[in-house]
Structures are given as structure tokens and as C-alpha cells.
Image (cartoon, rainbow over the protein chains, first blue to last red):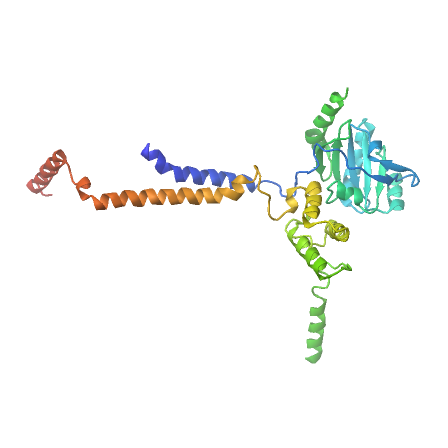
Length: 177
Length: 160
């Protein structure tokens, strides 16, 4: 018993060391979203394609991916082909055109194809702030009730889709009554 | 030489021009300016992780400064402004994490360790003091004494 007490400092040290060692390999860029399990924030913003039409959070029908993108964002370009492929495969994708020039964004969709069903124009970034966006691209997964269920920061590629998004998207589809 | 000096001075004046994040806000009074200054200094930029909102040049920091200024104009309290950001960006934006179940270890862990160490020290000191005050306890018992004597005798009988 006495021996064990002598070992206590060592065990304590090992515990703390393990804890801190693990911390070395966490990605500090990955912030947990504060909006998980909360509904999409309310907004009323113009449609990117038809500036006269106002879109609200109710027009973003789920289950779907809500992809925050912009033409000034090189990573968005990198992920765009992947989004096209997903859209072709039947995945519902909505877009939030974040702090962008409308004309440039429309041109981009013409040049690189348009995977989005609804595209919200957010030139001031107000919806972006309400969504807690801190850099494009960011992708939210919403369910049929418009509740945000997951968030991914960065470009979506095959691996991210297969490992992180596809299973969750599939689960949301099955959840739908 | 003089030219070189002037060139250097001009060069130096360029340093820092691009570095500081410059916005122009028209504050109502000195108190509001001070609140803006302290709020942007104590909130962390979500994009560039080791800078506060005041220092960061990231577009998102510019937007957040603008939002904070807008809320100050709307006479929101500091707590309301901080809550606004925490609701959207999470506890990450706070340099000082809130005290809740997830952060108890962070806040109180060091004190618990300190307490444990102090307890160990007290136990050690008390035990030693007890021994010093009461040397009879460390004295050998009769059987031990006998064993010592035999060992000593053996030793003196066959010196190596």
C-alpha cells in the first residue's frame, strides 16, 4: 500500500503528460461550431441569380449541404468539381455566396457549372456572421427541419465526403419521415 | 551618407503602415472609444488564432469590428456583445474561458495539484517531527539489539 502511494506522483505525471501529448496532435484550426443542433439563422437575402427574389431560411430545404463559397476563395475553386459531382449524384447542395461580387459569381457558375439548388447572395457577409463563418469554404449539413447538424471547414474532397459527410447525410435522409 | 540616412528613414516610415489594422470609426464619446478598444482587445479572432480582433487584418476581424461598433451604437451592453459572438463562434473567441463543467479541470486543476502537493509535504514534515521528538520509537527493540550485537561480533571475529 505504501509503495503504491510512492508511485502516485509518477502516475499523476504520466497522466498529465499523456493528456498534453494528445493535445500536440489536435488541429487548432478546427473549431467546434457553436451552431450545431440549432436552426439556420433567420435571414432575408436576394437570390444570386435573380436579384429581385428574396430568399429566407425556409427556402433552404433539407436534408442538404449548405456551402459557403466565394469567387475570391481559391479553395472554393478546388472543391467546386467535387460539388458538381455530388450534385450529379443527387446530393442536395445550397450555396451562400459570401462577400462576393454578384456578377463575378454568376460568371463563375456559368464557367464551372452550378451544383447549387438555391444560391443566396450575401455580399455584406451578414448571414456569414450569423452562421459563425470565419473563412470560406465552410459547409453545413442541415436536416429536413433546417437544423444544423454538422459543420465542415475547408474543401470537400473524396475523402472528406466519404468519411465525414456521406454517412451523416445518409442518416439524415433515412431520418426523414 | 545623408541620402542614405534619408532613404533609411523613409524606408522605416513604411514599416508598420501595412501592419496595423486601420478602420475609421466615429465614436460618440471617449467612454465608447474605450469600450470598443477593450472589447476588441479581449476577443479572439476566429481565423488568425493568436491575434485578437483589434490586431487582426483578416477580413472576418474587420467584419467583427464593424459588428461590435454597430452594437455599441445600438447601446448594447458589453455582456450582450460578447454573447452575440459566443453564440456564433463559440467559447473560442473568449481569451478567458468561462467556468463550467468542461473547464473545471482547467480552472481548478492547478489548485488541486497544489493542494495535493501541500498535503504531501505536511504529512512528510509531521511524520519526521514525530520521529525527532520521540527518539525512543526509533530505538531498536530487544530482539533487534541482540541481532545487531551478533552481527558486530561476527564482524570483529573475521575481519576481511
